[in-house]
Length: 285
Image 1 (cartoon, rainbow, N blue to C red):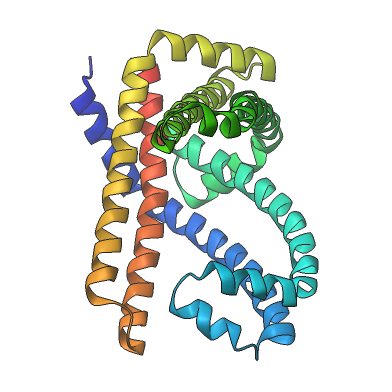
Image 2 (spheres, rainbow, N blue to C red):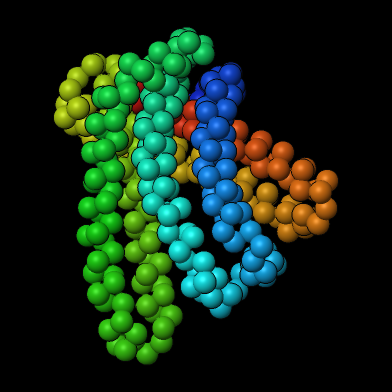
């Protein structure tokens, strides 16, 4: 029987071996991000490309400058926001397809070629879309239930407590609880999709099976996911430290940090693959 150390190592190996799958996902995401970026660039260049306020915003964050900027150029940004809503919908659909391919390849490492990725994405797109929409709705309901009382209580709490720090700590506590809830939903959703891949059950039955497995092995699953999340946070911290230490003061440094940033994005895809593989391994033991 595999222990947690063996599961971490096995998941890491699966993620590294499936670098071609990660490369496919990276290219797809890069093309989508480039499409959004070009759309944003074209709108901003045609309407506010010559604005001197942009130079002030490049130096550092200035709330006054940003507020004035939005007042003057708000009419140019509003159409962009309308277009981004549709782009986000397209991104959601592509995300379901991509994660279907990633998840199936991670769960079945013996079938992890490029063709397997595309086949799995197409085969499980609609079942995974229904599961994803269910958990998205659940997350939205949970967000309203948790944050609506906070919003209503926020102003009275500033008058009730002797110091604002108590309100800040209360909000931070709720944010921590909210984040932990999202992690639980994430693990549950992965287990539900894995259940559908293995059994071909209906959406409801897959979600039910996912919850049953999650409740049975919740501590191992949460510990595993939190461990990989800690790795991602460590990598982000190292990147920020490198950027703060050297800065991007020249074209060469900008190019170097662009390459480093893209390498980080690529490795994050591999980490996601490792998490899928690990959850599948824990589910199986």
